[in-house]
Amino acid sequence: MFAISPTDNNWFNFLKENNFNSFVNFWTPTPWNIKKIKVGDKWYFLLKSPIREIAGYGEFHTYENLTAFEAWRLYGRKNGAADLQEFINRIQMYIDRNSDKFGGKAIDITTYKIGCIILNNCQFWDSDDYKNVESHQISFGKQVVKYKYFNQYDPFQIAEGQSNSDFNWLNEPREVYKKEVNQRKGQSKFKGLILKAYRNKCCISGETCPELLEAAHLQKYVDDRSNHVQNGILLRVDLHRLFDNDLLFIDQEYKIHISSLIKNPNYRQYDNDKISLPNNFDERPSKESLRLRTSDFRK
Image (cartoon, rainbow, N blue to C red; front, top):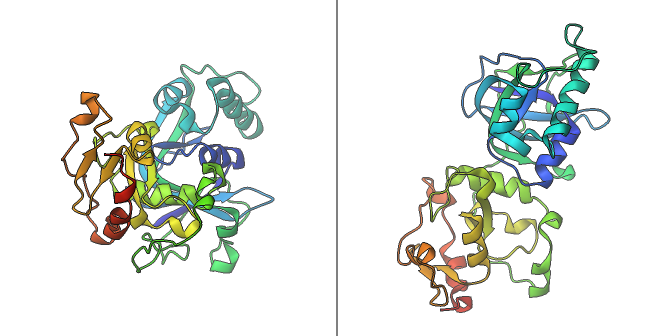
């Protein structure tokens, strides 16, 4: 089973731009009481007009009704808003527009409840990857304003590992590595793949706080070919910085090496440990890519 739901474009763009991919809140201004969908089922984002195309998805984790204040306390900016006031303003806007019962009067954020569809491993695609519902033989009328379930083959399914082939080191000029994260095509899709492969845990520290987790490239980003699951690992943000600056190295046996320049025992404790690996062998880091990083390690 999968579901499709009309999706607020601002919500989508905010989460994509801020790299929030797991435990995000696809909130609803009134409770929807989702029941049929199961953990791991895909919840597709159909961006609203004028776009009206599938722009990504999240994997269903849980549903709960929470007060607006509780939702902000638990999920913060993963509600798709920059601050509490913006979040409340958006809830109020939808209520005023669509609810005869609650519209036209200010809500009490400590008692008013919204629906919270919590999603993991979200992928927010780039515009050239958007999918048109009609061309994929999906019936989704404009009168559907909440969501629609589908018990059929999923025509939007993409290969989770990007391809059946292994990652090959890209022989490109080093200057192209300097691209900023927000200029990297497919970055959000890549992070979604890595989060799922590593079960939302840093492969070194075991950290699970979504705000502290980042998808690290083994070979620095060249173009969208770099976004292969075998070219990535999931790291806590500070460990990612050490890795990118060649102060942390992972060898071909997946053993961790901490540079002698790092004295802090909070980092030295990981020296000679092994990283946690994906269960799927096809998603494990490319040993050739790890080998080719050897010379850059600042021992």
